[in-house]
Image (cartoon, rainbow, N blue to C red; front, side):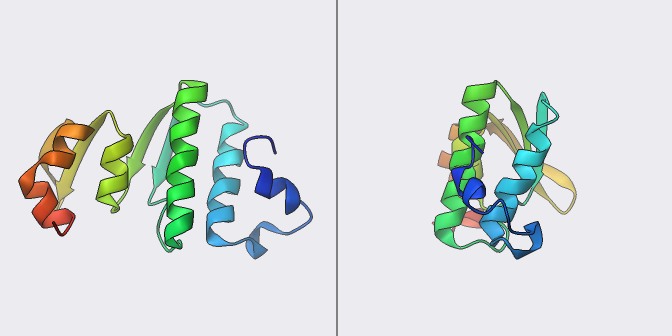
Length: 118
């Protein structure tokens, strides 16, 4: 409840009645109760409103810093994913297209053009 105060307000609700972002927070909170060293997230921003996407990425970044947690993230929101990752892999059609530090991939013209619409 400390990590996700909004869930404290919703504690009497069934998880199925939470918003998409609140469900993601609930899922991460449930996973964190096991005190993992690695958190694996598959498309945590899928179907969320833009403001909730930012909150989910902020939440994951805060967990990495506060808990020393490693995160394996599969995400189509390339900009947010690369901004938060130490190492990134761009996969297309089942093969690794590019790999490198997140900040380097974020500046890569091919990545910007193909995946970020820049």
